[in-house]
Amino acid sequence: MTEQTLAAIETETPPSLRRPGFMSVVKSDKKALVGLIVLAIFLATAILAPLISPYDPNDMDFEMMEAPSMVHPLGTDDLGRDLLSRIIHGTQISLFVGISTVAISLFFGVALGVAAGYYGGWLDNIIMRYIDLQWAFPNFIIAVYLVAVFGSGLLNVIIAISLAFLDDFARIARGMVLVIKEEQYVAAARTVGTSDFCIMWRHIAPNAVAPIIVQATVSISYAILGEASLSFLGLGVEVDTPTWGLILAEGRSFISRAWWLGVFPGVAIMLTVLSINFLGDGLRDYLDVRETGDPGAS
Image 1 (cartoon, one colour):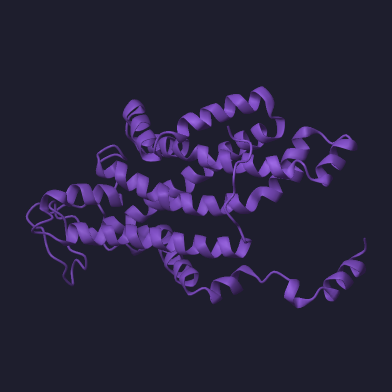
Image 2 (cartoon, rainbow, N blue to C red; image 1 turned 120 degrees about the horizontal axis):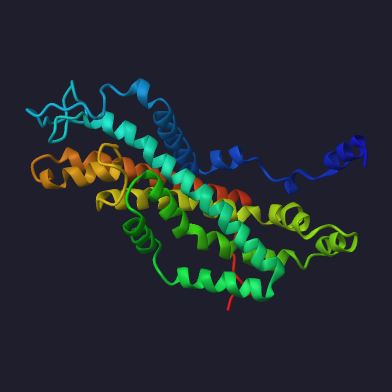
């Protein structure tokens, strides 16, 4: 098909049948627009943290725990460390953990789900029985158990949260593959001798990407909350690494006389999670994703 023919077809397509651009959908959805702006601010803060942070996040002054002032806009903690600087650097850790854990769980979860749905049989039974077993436990409990077994630290936190979210992506991918593999173009690909690997990752997986993207967006906010919760319990990153959950944990003993130690990191967590969820809602509307079942699960 020539470029002229494609251009003619596009010209003849009624405007009402064309999907609007993502930015058009975001602009028409006020919540998604607010979420995009707030998330962009946090991303810029994470990238520019060393440049915009007024102090070193670990510089201590043992003689002061100061309320918000011109010198320290968000106050200081019990060790005299500037709270604004710690929250700014904590943005790096929280967003890095959220994005990296979802990327890992998406990669392995989708791989397991696609293989289980495409091949079926004993491979499907083995994979899905494991997924069902993991599904029976709350994600946070799984993460706590894995960190308790393998120890704290940034790498172990990322691995623990990734494994906890793996089952969500596997079930969604499998459910989509069970439907898509029955389509005529998949049968045609088999007829001409296309390899299973090519069929799965070139023909099936791209057509199952919409609900997976939406799930990934939602999972980032859950991963940020998971890291904050683990750090709050003392199971997260090292104590010299400022994260929002660790800031909350360190300030809980002084919360009655230093309100800023709990309010400001809590607001940072709330705004980040809300912005991601608002943006995820807009993305779901743009991709027109409905609830995806798992028709072959048993």
